[in-house]
Image (cartoon, rainbow, N blue to C red; front, side, top):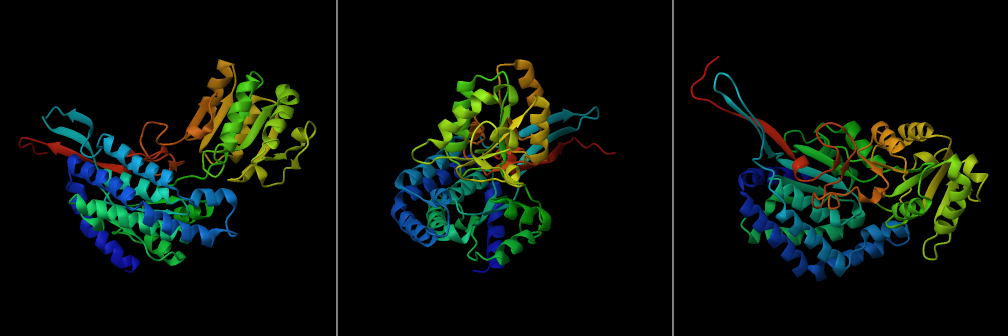
Length: 414
């Protein structure tokens, strides 16, 4: 099926999804989750082929993003079940006004229509995106990278079985068969057929969509996330948070890429940071040091691009700053607007940081790794929006709806 044929097919199904009630959608989601479990063998076989093709081409951490296991498939199914348990946003009255002339005006949440998602090598995005789009009353078009296409095909086949078994149209969920750049361009140009395009992936993919799409784009951001260790930080806490933010899963967008350290605690903190991160027996972290940090500990000298790079690997850029103001200014210059944290016992400093730093998520004494729909209580997410219009932060069900004004009268004329 060509991409255009697929778009026509999914548009024929979007009206059914828009009218489906909560019970029908939840029944379909639970059937989709059951189908994932039932097709685990097929999904793992397809993933093994993707992994075999990717070895030697992708880095170890990127292979981890691609890899599936029975536990990860079970986790995907559980994510769908959790979406079924969430409140249905469609039809919610967001605000209600009664005018002096008796008109009742209700701002009401409605489905987007057709949501297209372009993503790269994470097979779990397939089920997360499908579940969220369908629960939000929309039809869904998925276009994954070639590295994960076999896995995504097997996942979508299972999900479509679940949809059909529950009585909703399997055509409401489609996977683009063409993995060349041409299909991505077709989705970007599909005015009238795609109501919302969401890119999930690297900076190049996101920028291509934002710069070239003729359809509305909800920009999900790359994550150059910062942790600032203030002069009033509890250094044990800071060490624990930096290690978690960098090492718990470095290939994800909420992992820390930069550590800023106040000069008053740098002499004590940086040697401890080096021992902790570079001494890890499984995956030692490479520290890329600015001139101030390099005077205190050994490491790789930071290059011109190191404070503007989403490493997605066991690499951390480190800089010594002389004040909270310098830290905030550095973040303003180099951040992608995703997640930033301050570690401090000084409430005034924390409040200044939280107010000045203009990112989707700002933390006080916590790891940036919490920027996630599930951790925020939204269920699985479509991505993290770093833009300011329509939606910001984790994209849950409410963010995947639009709204319209429903006006109820008794014969009023103007």
